[in-house]
Image 1 (cartoon, rainbow, N blue to C red):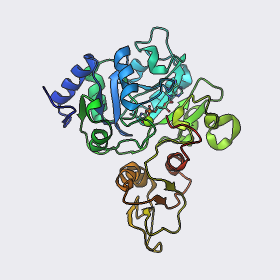
Image 2 (image 1 turned 30 degrees about the horizontal axis):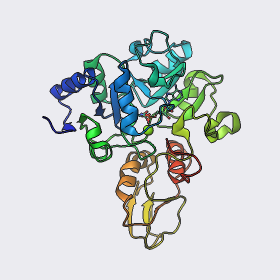
Image 3 (image 1 turned 45 degrees about the vertical axis):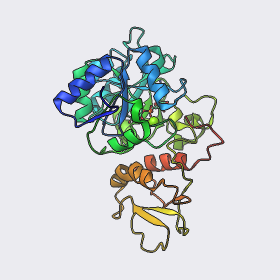
Image 4 (image 1 turned 90 degrees about the vertical axis):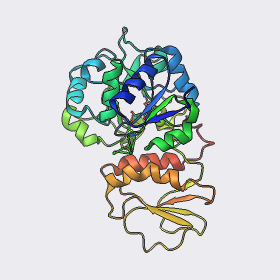
Length: 335
Ligand code: TXA
Ligand code: MG
């Protein structure tokens, strides 16, 4: 009997074994450039069910289907010219597109929570690519964390959070982007940004023209309606550590942990502190965000106080996740 989970460096042999486990209906955690994914054979209904069970995730919250390339993506979803333009321009990379689901998609209906749409992504990470090539079929994969919690950017996070619920962890080191993929819903007109990420609005608009985004207000922001969580990554409370999170901190209390950004010497005190990027580099901050929140989420402190993060570039995505991490959990149930 092999102890669970098997945690292996991603050699060719380990990737082949991971593909074998997927074929047997088991769950495998693997690195992507954004966060670690909890992978299952997307066509296997039982395996997909066990993803929801392992995460404690409600079955109305659909999963992203990971594919090796645009060609495999077209077997899952119906692409029009604009969607193809995005695929050519942004894949492989930290970008997910929601499209009409093909009737003959080799994917269990549970993956898309019974919706007639499906989210697809071609990850750029070498290990994710290797696994998709070895498995040669779509892999359904949410972030490899318990539902509502902080996404994993290291194999240790996965092991701590999911433990024996996963058969194997391909340990590919730290994720470079550190925030989940940008999600664009192309089933609406104009297309709508559901989740900000490393791929920014301008980059998308440069390829296909105007899209709607949450900062436009009302119509573009269904997130506020908890009864219609068509991308529950948008629910008010999500990505949340156990400790309360206090945003835009310019001071820190004696029992608080400070999560700093940029120069922080003028903020005195705090029980401990980590700095997302002493130089004020937003990409470095994104890559460090979840790992530092994981480290500060310790009952030795009373709260995590986070310094202001500029609203530009990937700062939009960082602030989106921080607002959800700070949202009261009673208001909208985390998913
Ligand atoms: O970077 C990522 O996207 C990572 C890595 C592992 O690829 N995955 C990830 O998956 O973040 P997850 O399950 O944690 O977030 C997927 C989001 C959820 O908010 C879900 O509601 C949304 O995608 N989603 C999935 N299918 C959808 C659909 N058909 N329509 C709208 N939203 C959808
Ligand atoms: Mg997630």
